[in-house]
Image (cartoon, rainbow, N blue to C red):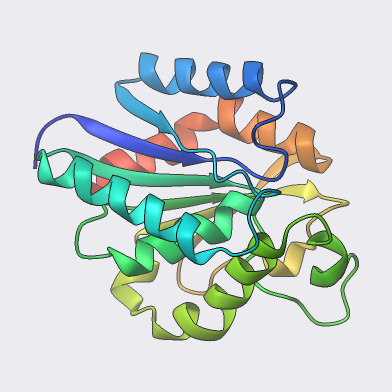
Length: 203
């Protein structure tokens, strides 16, 4: 692989909102200054009914970058977490590693909010979580899980704590509360945690 390490970054719901654009830009700026080449992919979670075409676009971007010889890793935040792990499964022979930041990976048992409540604005998000939970997670090999890191806030009112970690992966808890604030803190101020992890995997 090329020495250039590229990151496909997939944010969560309301990804195309102008309010979130400065945050996306700042996260990419920080990662770029640490030697990575970020590519922001906006699934437009609230547009379109299904997750399949969004997943296909992510996979196509992975293929495009890896065919150029680049090392490619995936970072997903919030709703983007299940999306990157589904894409990682599809191209685990090509992708270096995957990071889930405050992302729900399963429905959860007796948790609030329920997946139905959390996905009321996006059928595609619901489909992404269910695809990972029911089909892809059970197929992850131990070697795949070792290339995944999950990070959640110490307290998150939006994503239940039990739905974030992946068994066999590196699972961290950040000393921060609240979903959006936690995601920002992890993506920017805690970025060394997962960027170092991805860099080590690529050696």
